[in-house]
Image (spheres, rainbow, N blue to C red):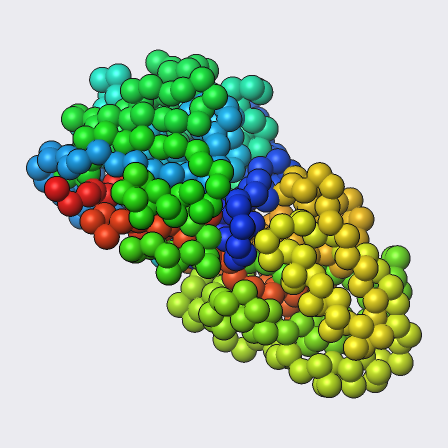
Length: 569
């Protein structure tokens, strides 16, 4: 077997949900990604192969095929080098957490598709892998994983001694039970997008108690890991599968004590059987949904809240905060083939429009650092699929006017739809003013209903030739899969030459091996001026000065891993 390195550095962007007010003042608004966006779980993920295995070679051959000839001796696997740190169980004082969103459906991770809800789930549930603060995918309940030479078989080696809050053992049988439940599940217990996250999985095979093998219907380690870091990866006790909303039981540091009737207050207690006891940082935790942003800041400063979601302008109003990259915001030229507006088929027209976008100026108008302006998915040179030689012109309105005039094309008018709150209307208005300098009229309208679902639905329907949008898939590869070829969020159904081939190649590889393909595909889309990215959206967690261990997760809008977070006694 080929050994795949467990650390996959890539920019994870969760996705699928963002806090729209994070770059603006005022009260929080509905997460701009809770309906249609995770229907981008990708066409590739949603297809499942159910082919029967060939009957040849007798029963022993069938058994060998089922196990994939896995070497179960951990001394010959990646697990041999993994040592688990086990410290003292010593929880500190209780924690009070303020959330900007409510969890309306209860603590069933399989019937939710918004990563903003991770703020609730991660206290109770864990997965085989998880995304880290730097955006990498790292093992968690699994010690490590290995992928075979053909890329269609991924084997996870599990930590021993892990138990669910109900005392049941977490083992390979529990993993299989969870994935089988998700693949067979239907609403309301399992939402289709969550089911689609495991679409690459053909079957799960229990090799032994601590070894579980995922047989894929095509080479696709990257697709599998992209699913496992999301809702489908949260492991629920097999005893409550199908009833997790009413009886939430996971393996994380905290067990559920009580939940109020409308799911706006969750009371958790420390789990004394946690497999990494030193990471249980509090005797108890109360998570409360508080819609008013200023009320959350006031709660921190009054000592009523220890940790809370805050807006960007409020970061100086709290004793301490944690922040990280979440979604990217920009424009997409949906009509780049010129079906509605012939001028948009001209690359030079599109690129002149891109050059008119004052990325830094718009960010500074929000009192955001200049570095939050961005022109590609990767944020910095150390990020996954960063493009060193990207040839996208910097803002220069005079050069943009000259470039558009040189095309010989006439000016035109189009509509753009934006969410009505936060930065969305400001960015759209600023861009519209710049395009007017070129002789192009952008008529902006607020979305009704003002939701992420509406925004993505209109993108899928190609309602606007050019639209401001969130690039909020969990990583750079998944964003390409959702927005190229015949994917839902590429309404033209076609992509520039070479893009689809590069994406298909990356899908068959590990994240590490496919990085060059992903970067090359992004380079084409950006230099063709079809994707015009404008900014990186950070979100913030404020907390008291006596709180330690809060590390905001890259790619998850308003969440942090609660492991090890504690209040000084």
